[in-house]
Image (tube, rainbow, N blue to C red):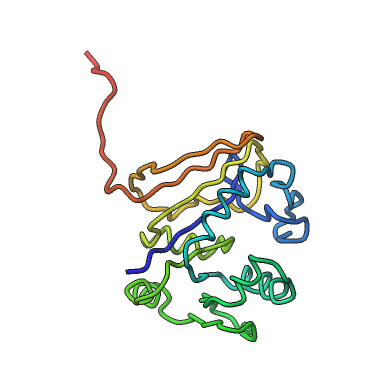
Length: 203
C-alpha cells in the first residue's frame, strides 16, 4: 500500500500560502510571498535531501502542478532529474495541460480514485504545495505522514493548513528537528480518535 506523505511549510499561525516566491500565489491580495527565504539553512537542506532519497511519485493540485511544469522540465539539477522522471498525479477539476512527461490526471470521483491509487503497488505519493488538495486529504483521513515545517514568523492572513473541515483525530510525533534559524520540522502519523479527559478534578 502506498502512503500519502505531506510536507508543508507553514508560519506559526498556520499560513502556508506562497512560501517560496513573491509571485507564487497572490490570491486574495496576499503580499508576503517568499516568506520562508530568510530562514533556510543547511540543516533544512539535509532534511529535504532525506525526503527525496526514498523513491516517490508526486501528487499535486492543479495550481502547484502548473507552477512545477513551467519550471522543472527546464532545470538541470538532481531534483529536476527526479521530478522529470517520476509519475506526476494531478488532481484537477478544470482543464490542465499534461504535456510534462509522465503526468496522470485525476479529475472525477477524486476521493475514491485517491483511495484506489494508495492501494496500488508503487512508491509513496509525495504532496508539495497544493493547499486545496491538502484540505481534501485532511477531510477524508487520507494523509499517512505529515511533515510540518513551522517557521518563526506570523502573517495574520493567507491560506492556512488547518481550516474548517479538518477532521478531529490524534497525531503521533515520530521525529523532530530544530533548524539553526528557529524553524521546527516535526513529523507525525495518524494516532486514532481524540481521547478526552481532565487535567484536574473540580470539587
